[in-house]
Amino acid sequence: MGDVQGISDQRIFVRSLVVWLLLIVAEIVHGVLRAILLVPMVGEFRSNQIGVFTGSAIIVLIAFFTLRWIGATRKRSLFLVGSIWERLVADYNVVEGGLMPLGLLVLFFSPVIASRLSGGR
Image (cartoon, rainbow, N blue to C red; front, side):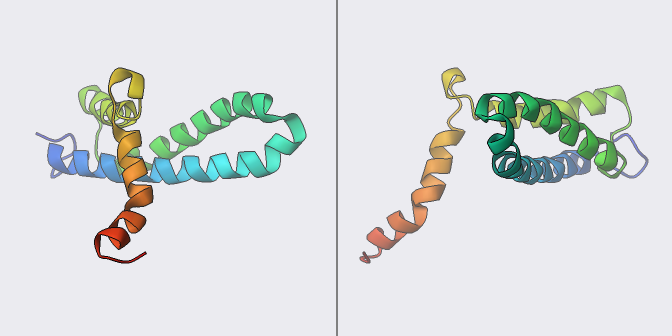
């Protein structure tokens, strides 16, 4: 049963995934801007340290502004949303057996692979 009347757990799950995609886009933009604007001023190491705090603030702001739309209001559902986001990120940890980086490599090389499979160069 969902949190807000008329919003099912499935809808909360799907909306959590949509917001997770928004988080990815926001963090990509954050990383690009950090590299362009901040690294030249303070260096890579210090920029990474600052980026942890600014990136965390971006994540919390997105969560703040999308939480009502997601529809999770009870703590159980809120922790479920957070665990969905955490679990998706955990798939990137190769040391822990996450294979998402392999999938991203396949995604990156897929046009070349498809071209070669179809006889192109």
